[in-house]
Length: 392
Length: 97
Image (cartoon, rainbow over all chains, first blue to last red; front, side, top):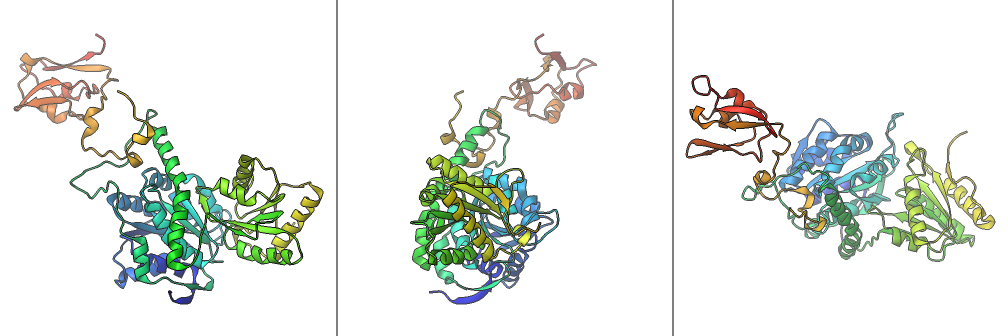
């Protein structure tokens, strides 16, 4: 059993990176993820890790350097937030299209404008279609655990795709909470050695990365990429099973909280799920059958499994800490797709909360659950999409 | 050539074989074709040096025919050719003529 310490989310991720000891890290500082690379840079200068740390002039360059290092055959990691991820955008597609298993910590933060440094999911959801595997984390422990699993999933020979681990900016990245570490040797065994496919540094077998592919082949490569990321669902579960053996902590595609007999379900991602679970308990104490689903693997999205878990609910409230302006929130779209595809038709509402780091309070969850109870009684959903916790 | 299916492709569009661009015929959209007039050629190999697409074949230090599979018809070889006594050893001829 590993040592237990009170630590911030950023520290936890930096420690995880230290234990992984990647070959190359290329990064550019951005709040609230700065502390991860700042601490990791100390590990590099203190000689605690063997990593080649590349300090670059922007996040676009950071991801470019990661891509080069990964194609060269190295195990590569980085961290970023918000505008940094946005600046990486075109390179994110190149990393996934080239099938490079880069692992990245994304400390979720709102996107400008107006300028805001606090936590919401606009950055992660904005990179939804970039071909990266996405794991979301409720707290520092989950972020720490997810980093190791992300490396394993990304590098799995059936997958070979980049993966990002998301946690809420400030709420998790800068708050101190108690969590348990794994011993270094256990991590080393779990992570194993990285065996690159087609490394550029193998001079005996020269290869070319990044050729022009025209209409006669492009769609075949995309189909292969689609099939590869689909396999990540199975591999995520396999890796989670192995991880449970070394940590005692069990992970799935998502967390089901008191969902088994729930007539009312809420879907909440990341740190807000912790708050919402308390509120679910309070309603359960009053005899109201409420449950919560906290997604973990967002890309690929486990539609069938989610629909199965939510299948018994008559009404579902989906919380989104990001907006797709002019559309439903990104999580709502996934849950709605899952339910429609499964043939069930619960009443579903979408509530946008916590943008730009606005606190998500128990009263917010309470108000929405009350609304859901009413919808269940009347069979009528009013406004499908609405902002909550916002002043008139 | 039968095109490959998605399962047969190298992961991430990597080209695993060095130098296989040679197998890809890229000369089809040429508008003008260079024509070699051997009697005017002094074998200076300027054409071979200047050709941006390695489309002048050379064997035993002497140039031979053009590689029309890769020549784009840019005309640099014809421009640089010093010829013999004022007569060019390479002239550009419109395709189809």
